Length: 162
Image 1 (cartoon, one colour):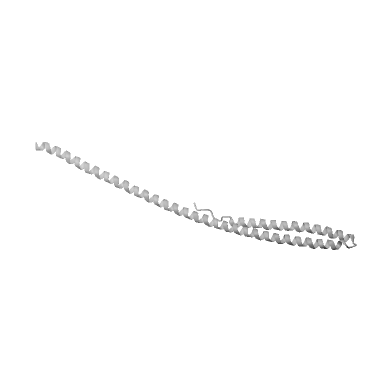
Image 2 (image 1 turned 135 degrees about the vertical axis):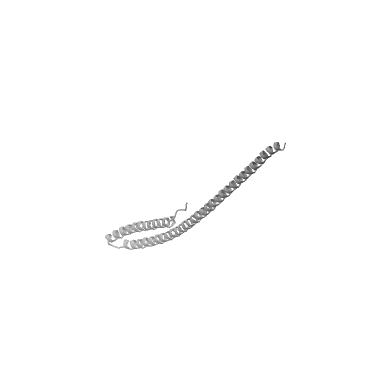
């Protein structure tokens, strides 16, 4: 009878050893999966950190570009004010010159020389038209130069990091 139990004992020992081996394999598998998951999380974390740094660098660059653009725009507006002030001074000078020419025409009206009167009238008209056109042309040239300078100063010099 002992022999009978010894056969079952051996099978029980084999089953116990098999269960221990299967348990060890399962534990090793669980450990390996956990280690892989930790590695994945580390890679995700590194990627997130790199992405945050990239976004911060891009935001800094955009902020710098916006600051340059805003400064150029402000300077352009200041130049526009200066141009308009110079235009007003030029207009005042043109009105003053027209007044002088008109008073001279009035003085020449009493003169006996018809040619002098006609010359003065024509010169006055031509000079007034030339002064107005010259004033307008100078203002447009200054305005165009200001726009070009503003555009040049506001243009971004570097592209965002990718």
